[in-house]
Image 1 (cartoon, rainbow, N blue to C red):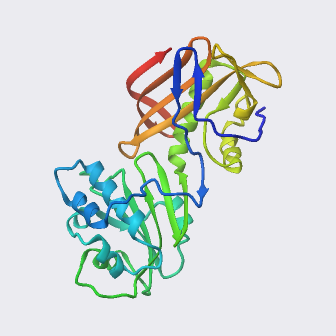
Image 2: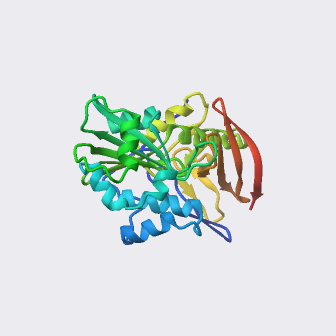
Length: 315
């Protein structure tokens, strides 16, 4: 039976001779946050990067996303957007379709006479991109894919009726930021990303076979408890990191019971395709330090398969 407790975030742990700087994972929504893409660069500078072939596709797509995160606001018209993005090159190369992402569509609150457009930035030959922008637009009755794409791509259109109600940006690691109003920003990891994190953590728990665990994470308590429901069939105790005791030798204990325990975390660095991701998982809590694995996994029917291992270690 899993036990649920209040949760605190942890970012750094010290074990003998080794400092582990842990990149924590945000497991669910945060409101009134600051965008990861916040920048002081001018939109014209970002546009220059977006259209410059000397930059890697990742850098160009990030620059495009940064334009939206910093200079496009919910309530603006498509004409307003065109004045900001200025360029036709990257937009003409994007894959623009009606969004089929139910999770994002739900958060953007699609309504009658609105359309949520998916813009895959600098996609591969299969039309897939790790960077995507979703625009929830309205202003015309019976708006369709063709109308939406026509107004986005054709700079000669002067129609100020079509407005951006709100929009979202999805990142290569599965993080999604929702720009819902002028000053309302929230974020969450996609369900697919959370599923991989869940499976990586469970894999670590199966290998280690410990009874007490602390999951290293960052996020609000309600969302963390929701995430923990994924572990209901695991006969382990998962408690607040605040209930962990770490001695000078790096051993982890449960304060209440005095039982030995372990800390675990998992991270997706980036999605490489629809079902391939570069990941890392790690656990630590004994005198040996940490054990971990990093590489590329494939998500198959809610299971993970290691396609390539970059490194596997104990220290």
